Structure formats: structure tokens, C-alpha cells
Length: 357
Image: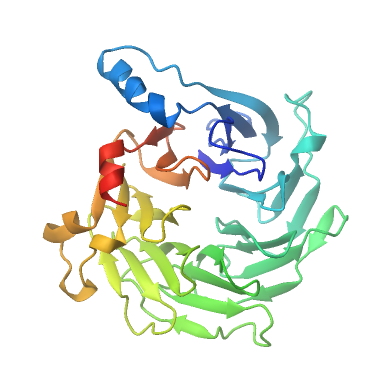
């Protein structure tokens, strides 16, 4: 299962939160792209909710699936267009990227048909990396197991959309891509070649990025995220069990290393409300929330001093956690999903989160 919080400009903390969910079924069962709605408890009732659970009472918080769309193959990743949340792109075992306009689909499938509005072509293998440009409407970026990165313009109305440009700087699987949060033309990519590549879409070369960090980790790099508050900070996560923080102005070495995960780290995301806070999740079935204001130098970091920057560990899952998403409107609220198709929506204890701010 994978997820992504939907964010509407009209949303407030009191309105229901919406989540994009995708299934990973087995034995040929139908997979779905879904939109779910959840009413989170307000801040002033959160402690009552916690006490209810401690007292053995069931939580009143419910997750309701409001839209269910047939999907061909498991949903590797799904992301909505920031400029139009009805438009959702998905990755699957297919080499193509599918794009759906949710407003054109019924709440429940009428048959077993698979009907995306667009198919973005250009890759030769499946993949996971997927990102909409937060600055330019309808510009979609994708990475693939074939090592390539493609970009498409979804302003086109054609059912089959060819790639505008393809980059081939990775020598192995391109695991993830992410747009820079301040520059509309800059994006980053990471892969199984252990490299971090930072590109400019206006550049002439399709093989040479303007920043290349070779051997950035000691194993496959799974995730990359640009800090939305600080234009030079980048976070990456890897099979080497580390989360690393980089300064784009000098990438000779990471400025911080976050130790604590016991197995590969599959995702990392910055908090939308604080420049120093980020979360990571992985195969050790744990989600860790970090505060960089408490971090120690990368050169001296060790497992023993992980507590300096580690705010919280969520250990509620029984399988590896494949995706996480911060709630864009409710501080400290996070949704996580694991490979056994379990969704958990949780929020750190207020006393812990206050200490981290």
C-alpha cells in the first residue's frame, strides 16, 4: 500500500483530511487507486482520544474510502498535481505512468475496466519515483528501473503523452526523483548506483547534471527530498540504514547523518511546518521523527548518540513501512502504510512535539 495526503487550498485543520491510497494485492486480485477521508481529532480533544485508547475504548476516528478506481497492477506510487488535486499520477508494474482525473470517475467502479485519462510513455521498465512540479502546472517527473528520468507536459490532451525530455545520468536503477521547492527548473534524482544527481531542465546535456555526488551512500539510495523552507538542504535515505542531510553549496560530504534505523530506509520527508523536522521510515517497521536543531556532526555520529536528534519512534506496524506522508494542515500528524496493506494515522504526543519546536 502507498499513500499521499491531498492538500486543498481551501482546507483547514477542522475539515476532513483526504488521503490517496493504492493497493498491493496478490493472487490476481483487483488493485485500486482510492481516495479516503478522515476526521482527525482536534488539538483540544487529542489527549481525550489518547486516554480513550489507554482505557480500552475504541477510537472515534474513522477512515472512509470515498472514491475507488480500478488500477491495472499494484500501485507503486501515486501523487496528485498541486495545482489541481483531482489529477493523480500513478506508477505500477507497467513501464508507463498513468494519469487519472478523479472528477471524471464514479465513486465505485461500474465494471472491471481500466480507464486512465492519459498514459505517459518513455520508460522501458517499471519504477517508483514520481513528482509533480510545484511551480509549473501539469509538469510531471518520473524515474525508472531502466535508469532514466522522463518529464511530461500534461497540458496535452492526448491519451498517449510522449516525454518532453529524458535524462540518463544514472548507471543503475533510478529510485526516486524530487523537484526543488524554490527553483522551478531544478530537480534531484537518486539511484542504486549510490549517486545523487541534481539537474536543471534548461541544461543541454541529458547525461551530466550540474551536481553529481558519487558514492553518496554505501548502498542503494531510495529517497530524496528538498527542504521546503531552506533552498540548499536536501535529505536522502538508503539501504545503508542512514538518512543523510546535504548542503547543495558543498556536497563533498554530508553535513549530518541520522543513525537509528536497523534496516534499509525507504522514505524520507520534511515536515511542512518546521524547517528542522523530518520523518523517515523503513524495513525495520519503524517511523522515526528527527529534529536537526539537536543533531550532532556527521563525522562523530554513532548509534549511541542517535537520541540527540531523535524526537520520536512510531512502532505500530508489523511489516516494512513503504511510505509516509505528513498532514499538510495538522501539525505533527503523519500517515504511514506498510506492505501488509495496513494504514495508520497518528500524531506525536503534544509534550514530545513541543520539546522539538
